[in-house]
Length: 256
Image (cartoon, rainbow, N blue to C red):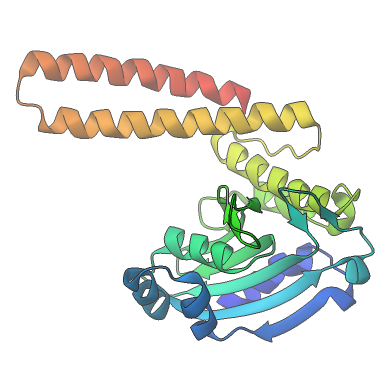
C-alpha cells in the first residue's frame, strides 16, 4: 500500500458524504509561508514534507451537522488533511506546524516510512489577538504501524465513521474523533480498544494517559541521570526511585 493509499484508507473509514470531499493538492509553499515561524521550521518543511492534500471539508452544508462557535472556539468547519513525510522528517514538529497553519480544527492523517498516524489539535481563540487561534495540544496516535495489532487497528477503524460520532454540532464530532484517538493510545498500553462517548470515561482516560506519559518521562530522565552518576550510593538511590515509578506506571494502566 502506497503512502497516499494508506491515508485514503483512513479517510474512507470516516465515511464522509461525497459532497465533503475536496481532494486538492496544497502547495508546500503555503505551509512554509503560513505555518513556519522560524528558519529551522521552514527547513524542516522543505526537507521533510513530500506532499500535502486537502482531503475533505466538513461544513454544515456538506455533512448536515450544525456549526459551533462561542467566545473561545470556532467550529464552522473541520478540515481533513493528509500529508506524506519523508524519511528522517521531524514528524512531531511537522504535525504541530500543519495544525497551527490552518485556522480550522484539523483531522490530520500523516504517512511516513514508519507507518500512518492520525492526530487532532483542539484550538481556541488567542487572548488579545483578534482573529488568531492557538493550538492547545496535539493528540496523535499511530494507526497503521507494525506495533498496532490487526484486531485493534480494525476496531479503531470501525469506530471512525462520521455516523458513529456525536452529532450535536461540529465541535461534538471533533471531540468524538479526539476520544477515539485517545482510546487507541490507551489501547496500545492496556491491550484493549474501547471507544465510547461517556464524558466521565473520557476524562478519566485522558487523565490516566497524561499521568502515564509524565511517569514515562520521569523514568527516562532518572535513567539518564543514573547512567551519568559516578557515586554508587547515589546510583542505588536513583534505581530505587526508578523501580518505584515503574510500579506506579504499571498501576496506571489499570485506569486506561
